[in-house]
Length: 534
Image (cartoon, rainbow, N blue to C red; front, side, top):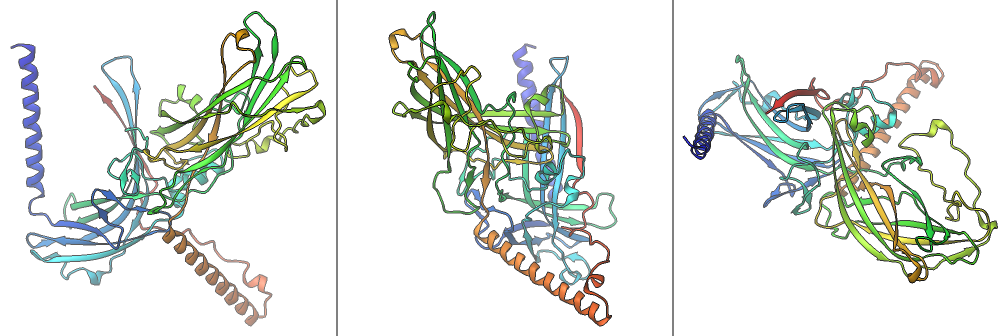
């Protein structure tokens, strides 16, 4: 038999196997109750796109169950579930074998309470009778502590891990508004939210009778976080770049040009279900300083500034103790990274004006910051003074210098779905803004060529909440304030009736446990498997 015949036979056998598997699955589902999940109001599926939900939004709907014949059951579970699925491939000594580690983290489970009176008695679904069960869920503002029970390096890491991650990596729900767009996530990561319905049967080794899920898109609100601290030797970011400017290959030095920037204000994504189709923008500031080798030398002519944004997704098959950094990938086999860079704009700055300064205008050096403040969530440090003048270059010998300030508009492309900056136990998304400055020295006949300087600046993408979610949050906050006032008044009156000072009446007591989403023991657990893919 020829190689082509063998290949054809393999394809045919695989096709037959797939057909048999499909038929067996169809036969297995025959006779089981049919489940339909409908989202209420305007939050259902419209055509091929899914409506988004944000923090404190209410998800309402109904579950319809119809059995083809009388079917006894024990319970019906309706839950709002959030899971993260990750796999990491690592090369092995054998080229034909790849080591793969997988992890699943169910970080959210809200269960809809169903009273016994809502079930038929006895618990049997009658043939062809339709049973309808309503459900209501609220997208929480924060996860329970049990969702991140592993060790972390700081409270800042824990705080970020307890934020809801956005829907990610699923092409069925990725997008903005009515358009499905690429969210720039690798196939190795997926964050999925769904309404899950299960019908359980009694007295069986496998109690699950039938299960149905419906995906929903969750776009949580993300507030601006403190800027990052960037050291001078940071491999991922560069906020300051010094470059010697020469007349030509064998000629003298004109001076030193310093380019410096800082983390700009965040890019803010409109809230879920927003009708705002405006571009998401911010403004980066580029500060230049030229220290001439001789006071007779003029500053260089400026050309353009090219801006790009690098999208980085970190993923891991084991919980992260700290914020991810690229330098740790070499020795961490459980972590992977996916990066892509998108061009933004090219800004001509040939008309930018230089301002001449005397040596008296030099900024004072900044005092060293205390080491206890050195955290990736604390303020970023640059050498810019209050008047936005960079500190002198290392070879500055005094005398006059020149400065220029350039505003660089940043606008995200409309053909991509940008997720907010976030860090979860297994997946993180961060962004870096690249600014490339092109310039040339005066007298083009004496120049070897154009020069470029580049900066890599961290930038955050935040997300607003929906109008409904923010209104619900205000109502919830008002209710909590009223409840606290009522408790304080009750404690005061009880203390007065006993003749005790109010402080004694409100002093003791046992700390209350945090509120629960539902009685689900497995929430917050991680499931990791190691497989060999040949």
